[in-house]
Length: 237
Image (cartoon, rainbow, N blue to C red):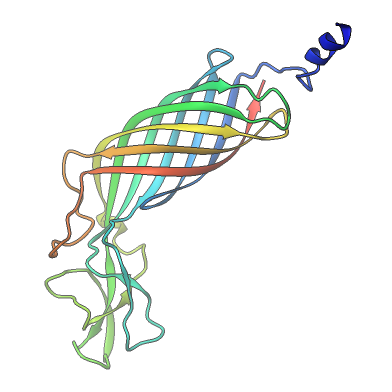
């Protein structure tokens, strides 16, 4: 009997520490791009944490296909028909709710996560390098904002710098929500390493014109994505 009691007392390999907050961030990938996230969590109980954070993700259109100018080997790839680049900023509030405790150093803590907040869609026009005149070989190459009525595969040399058009960026406000599960496996008491898997929804009151109005291309106002995030951080007492 004494042996049994002793074994039960050693399930926890170290003294349990009451934490007050967490700081962590990471990189995420989803079906149409990738992004970064940063979160601050405050313990309201031993199992529940209030979340405040922000995510910044790129969002591609499913019809984006990289093309190259076949006559110039040093040309930069571009996405034919893409009018705007979409960057999404998500200020988020939510909760992290513990499902299973870690117990051992080698264990895994499982949490359920939900979050909501505004979704700020930042649309920046696409600029391309355009060959002049409209025939091969080009006598000159200039940078112009993509116009499907003027630019086609005959005169597009390649993509221009992403920074072109920053002063023309427009903000499209919308809403954001997510649900997820996190699996934390750090071997350190105050360390935080984990994987988060979940689903997100960004919704806007209007369609976001990522692609030009070409045949067979439909732009969206609702963006539903599954994602995977790799996270690192620290817990504080």
